[in-house]
Image (tube, rainbow, N blue to C red; front, side):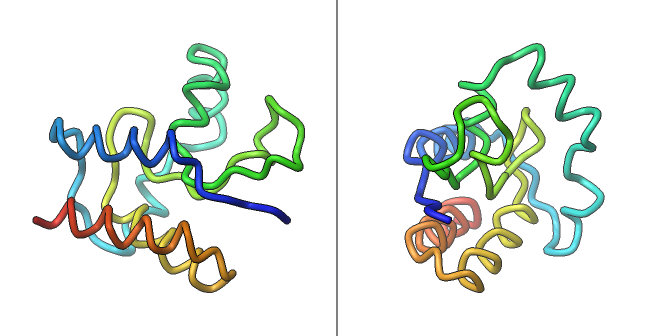
Length: 114
């Protein structure tokens, strides 16, 4: 698996923070706040793959374009960045050795919490 940091998504996340489009929820809230598969599919159908990619800090360029397998580490609900998602993916990135994504999430949390 060749997951790397999606720099466009990182910039999108920073833009959301700057615009105040965030939810400052708690660590364990992501399981309840993350979009359902049906909601995700409906959003994807309406907005397309380019916008879908902007909501995922991980990208696996070895996976085919326009597939969900290509994108990982989601940080929001397609309208707002969720603090709980960033916390969750920081932990996952560290657990699986994705240092660039882990570092990016730490910076996002500092921006979010400042």
